[in-house]
Image (cartoon, rainbow over all chains, first blue to last red; front, side):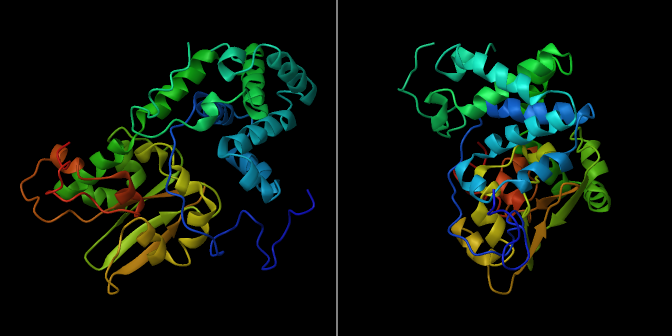
Length: 116
Length: 218
């Protein structure tokens, strides 16, 4: 986590407008159910006042630049949603960890491990 | 359900993301855990999640296309859209909530293109969820620096005399491009015109379909 903070020009990494980069990748994909669920969790929890879009972004922007390459969009989002809910006192890291262990025992795929 | 590998394309014609077939990932596990705990604690219900996903799926670029086609055919609406796009589109049933929506019009001399350099802000009420390229490092970085080159990668080459205006979205402010109405569409109905309006033409990375295109009335 040491690679995060400002780039040479004083911008943090997420503030990437104007930087050099390669060709725009034009391939697209349909969102998987779990990705839509992450989006829905964000919308619903923020609508109910548990955190805000600014909180979502703060955690995303505090991630190291490598997370942008290593994690997909909704992988970063669920990490941030989870962190924000812990900060808000809605969930604890212990119960999330415990539940994740139990879920892994249910089966090898998302369909096996998710009840809906 | 057994995996069926005969059909690699979804109904929309995109490939399914590869990870649908992969073993349960760490982050998927976290999504399940967070969702289950929130439901058990009564913070949200399973029905609310399902309903939110239905809303998400119902928002497609057809919403934006209806707005554009109306702007092309209804001068009063066009004026209302320019005055306050949030209000004008909410009245069509496409509420953007507390955010401000700005409609920017292309003309013969001006082409608008929308980006979110900081993240992925997008007019979801009119276009649905943003495509992957909109969220990519390349698009976010380069669109404000070399928009003509970015446009060329999307197959859009504009005359040097056309001014290009780049709009950088924020969490609170979203943009929709109103492309120029294609020539040769005099007398067309709003519904027929809407078929010419592509998603990319409303982001500014594309142009509307030509009325002569084989799929113009698809």
